[in-house]
Image 1 (cartoon, rainbow, N blue to C red):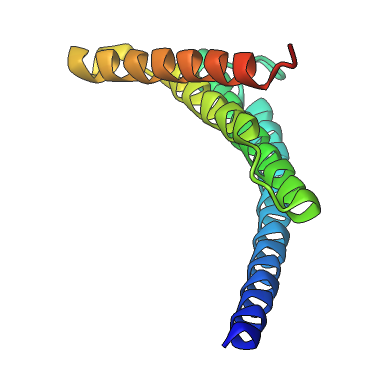
Image 2 (image 1 turned 30 degrees about the vertical axis):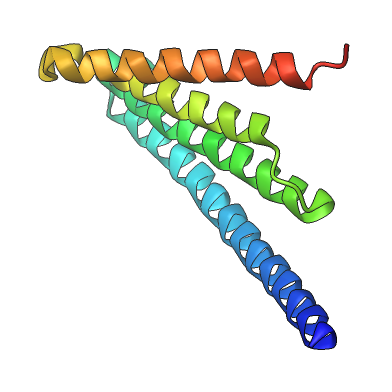
Length: 143
């Protein structure tokens, strides 16, 4: 029975690594294609601008949106890479990904289109992430 448990544990660890590798490869592909898409969007919007190379606020926010999505993708690649190397999920990386994701939402947010409770909810998420990250860093810092 003990041998069967060891075999099953080894199988599950191998399975986890294979899935993590596939996820990493797919993330790399998505970030690569997203970067190409960002370049294409930037080029197209600059050409379509009435004054060549000048972008309006909506175009700039659209570019920031894609840019921050790529940053989130890079952070997820880093988290997956660390998981594969150390076989541990670093919570601080996950917090950073969440903070970039919520920052992306805030940057592209048109506050006139949302109910005040939605804005309150977003601010609550920011506060919770900030407090959680503070306590995480305080806990991880050597004394």
